[in-house]
Each structure stands twice: as C-alpha cells, then as structure tokens.
Length: 478
Image (cartoon, rainbow, N blue to C red):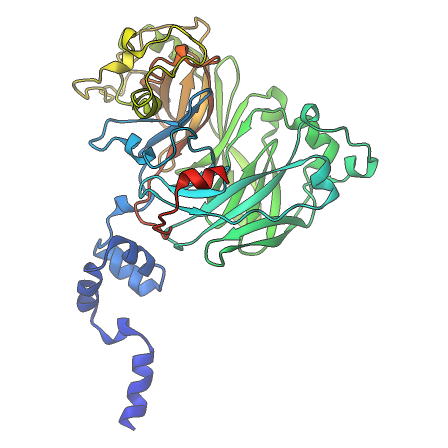
C-alpha cells in the first residue's frame, strides 16, 4: 500500500517533492537560457523564478535599448541610443560586410531578414529557414507580394513563428488585372491562407484564418490605397497586427482575423500614420504635414474594436522653438555603424557618389561624443528643453516623421527633416530633442538622404537559436 501511495506523489513532479527553497537553490545554478525555458514549464516554476528574481530582467526583451534606423544608401542599419559601455555596433561583426542585414521584420529581440535568416543580434546566433513553398494560385501570380512577419515572446515560449502575409501591389507596380471577378473580390479573402514556419516543427505549413466581420473592400480598392504611408506591424498578447490602409488583427490561437478600420479622421486628412504597441496596448499615431499630432488607443474590451482618441497637439511651435537651439548633442547618439564597420576596413571605397571623398578630410558632429550626460529634463514648466538640439539647420521648413513607439511608456519617437531625433511624451505634451541623427559623412556616399525604416529595439539575451558554424556569408548568397 505504501508503494502505491508514493507513486502518484512522484508523478506529480519535483516541484511538489522539493520545498520551494530547495527548488530555488537548484534553479539558481542553471544558466539564463535554461531558466528562461523553465519559466514556460508551469506556473509554480515561473512563480519561483520570478519571485526570487533568479533570471535578470535585462536578459529578456523587457527594456528599450534604442532605435534601429535604416538609412537610404547605407549598408547596415544604424543604432540611435544613449551611450553605453558596450557598443551595439559589435553585434554586427558577424555579418558579411559586402551584404548587410536586410531586415524584413523584428519581434522582441529577433530579426527576420529577407534572406530568410532569423538572427538575434544580442547573442549573435542565427537560424536559416528552409525555402518558402512556391505559390501557385492565380491571385499570387497577378498582383500579390508577401512580407514575412516574425512572432516571438520569450516569456511565453522559447520558439518563434514566421508568417508570410500577402499584400496587394500598388497599381503602378502591378500588371493590370483584366479579370473583373478578381478586381471585385473581397480583400482580404476569407479564409486567408498563410504560410507559417514554426521553429518547434522546423517546417512551413499552410494555416487557414477565417474572417470575423466585414472585409476592408475589394481588390481594386486595395490597389488604389497601397500608396498610403502607413507603417507598423507587431505582435501583442497572442495576436499579430498587420497595418496597411486598415489594421488586420490575426488571432494566432483560434485561426480567425478581423479587419479594423483606421479612425475616420485618418482617411480624411491622409497623414503619416504609424501603428504600434505601447503602455496601454495598441496605438495609432497620425501626423499631418503641418505638425498636427493625433494619438488613438484601441479598445478591445467586450470583443469589440474601437479607436479611442487619447491625445492631440500641434507640434510645429515646439519644433520651431527647439530648432533655435545651438547645442549639437543630446542624451542619445548615433553609433555610426556603417562608418566604423566599413570605411575603416575598406578605405578608398566610399566614392559611390563622390569621387573626391576622403574620410580623413572631413569633420562630422558625430566625431566627438559628449563628455557629460547632462541632458535630462529639469523643468516641468517648459513645453520643451531648449538646450538639446543640433545647431545645423538643413531645411527651414522642418517636418517630423515617426520612428516608433516606446514599448512600455507613452512616448512617441520621431525624426525631423534636418536629421534630429525627438521624443514626444504624451502625458506631459513635451517634445524633447534626443540628439543628432545624421550619419557620419552621409552626404558623401548617399544620393538621397532619408530614413527607409526604423523600429525600437528590445534586446533578448537568451534564445534557442542554434550555435551553428555555418557561414552567414554562404547563407546570404544562397
């Protein structure tokens, strides 16, 4: 009888047999990657690890390190952040210099590249995905292109997924659709068939998602709307949010999706639009050319989706006041990754657009770093801090565009046409100049000077990516 009574006790798991103090002492001896994986085993183990702070929070994607910025004409995305003892440029040393990381998407510290590599810049690990299955549908042939979006939540699971999302090509980039049935068909279709790669299964699969509610319109209408300047795709609380001229919420767990139209004001003024996640969940920010900022928060209570206007302000006066400042530096700096990783190793090859360019003959505001970090906000009475701006005025009619949302605070990051970085604090309505964004010697090797894409970066120092010895150089050439 005693043996029969002991067997169920052992089967219930070590967390029942061992006192919590003993279990914690065992877990404390494990490396961070193992601890992060064990958090997903059961709620008791997660509670023990979290309550005793066995896993450092900075190892998981829970803090903002800075903003990655992809400048037109530069080989590598650059990094804009506060100065730190460990230069973020070091994380790109394992990429081939002749072909920088072509980032398609990102999620909680993982990057998805166009070459179907999944990369963690923090740990310098990567995985090469198998080739995407070929498309054979008539829709794909005529007018669709696919963009890969990566889903990764290390707190929930050590595995990641990649979703290939179809988009309608704009009219100017697409063969005219002669089939009237295709033109007038619903977009997005239902069911929506997506190719999904799972790192757990290690293969691509087709998954079907059924639409709940109305469509966004017809295929022909989608073609006409693709020119709108809309940005922001992200994962939040079990759903993938895909932004175009509407927001599509894909529920990963139950195989459904919903079409969420933008606020009516956005359709009327057609401003610059950015959708992302921040302190309260899903945010939509719109910015008109004259500096009028509007911010909505998505209310998802009771199964309904409704945009709630949270904030409005005219940023033009604040921007004009900041531009009068004569200071060059702010609390953040651009790391000039391209200059340090490329020009110093290949001198003399920076003559793509300027045959007379010699790096040693030029001086840039980024050549020197601030000696002191005295750029905090000291006053709650001023709308701005007017001692934190670049003195160089490239454009008297300066304007703002979005760089992204702070993932945990109600802050919107922006850039100006004169290549300055700003943080707009929604709760206090203050616009803070973060520092100079202009890459070192940018004008001498880029035909156009503008930002192609940007996103806030939350590093993750634990992952399940393989410690492979395969050359990234070879992977990028395949």
